[in-house]
Amino acid sequence: MPPRSPLPPRHGLAAAWLRTPDRDPSGPAPWPTMGTWLRDRLPDDVDVTGMLAQQRFVDASGRAVHDDDPYGPHRFVWFHRDLRDEPPVPGPIYVVHRDERLVVVDKPAFLSSIPRGRHVVQSVVVRLRDELGLPELSPLHRLDRVTSGLLMLATERRWRGVYQSAFEARTIHKTYWALAPLRPDLTLPTVVRNHIRKDRGSWQAQVVPNAPVNAETLVELESQVGEHGIYRLTPRTGRTHQLRLHLLGLGIPIVDDPLYPHVHDVAVDDFSRPLQLLAGELTFVDPLDGEPRRFRSVRRLPLGTDS
Image (cartoon, rainbow, N blue to C red):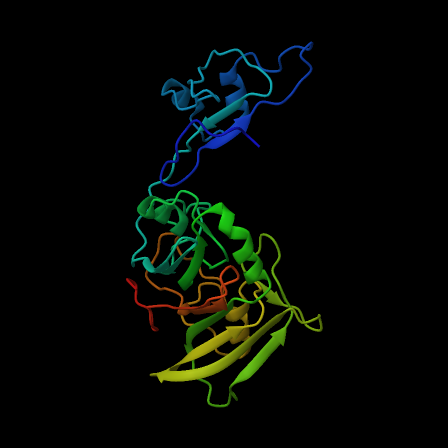
């Protein structure tokens, strides 16, 4: 691990870092200068020359790294990456609860939970670290970018382990609601049990017939909205895309799902059709103080483009 970064966070993100390799001090230097090493180490689309000229690379003391600085082994270099311009995701982030240990938010669809890929500034973590002044804020469980609703985060690193363990042990109970077609011939409530697998690099997960059960969801019809129903979903496991696949398997795919039953070519910044899936409730006994906790989303189905 590197020493403490000499650069402060920017947009709620810690500075990136690199380290020159170790080598035999009696051998020749593999790169003549630090600028040469940085160009070799970083991708071609990074303007290393421009960043060096702007003194955006710094060493452990905070001194700017220059293009012609002699190369040396086991040296740390910090810098902030350039970020693409990201259009704001419509819809507010509601802070449902905040205390010393936890922040629970109700996020809109299309807002990533963590900075990843093309969604960095437009993520819950980056926005709220800055807005709430919590530089160590981090999510305790997963919530897909296209899913709306409750996300629970730890205010500091020291609180993460105990709550993450509670999620892994399934002692924190999640309830979702989904808008999907009605099927008069479908007997509800029902429990869907099967085996779900998602291969790396594949957009869709799949049900594997005759494999051991690893995914289970209780599906109940709660109300009707026109030709659609609002379904209450209680997952007893947490496989990737589990709820979307389970409703698809019942013949009632979730409205405006960009992946199921077919993958749709949707632009990364197209916010016009939110997935009608809402992470609506979290209930548990707090593992640290024994107090009962219940958090409920302020959003309701059907979700609009600015919900």
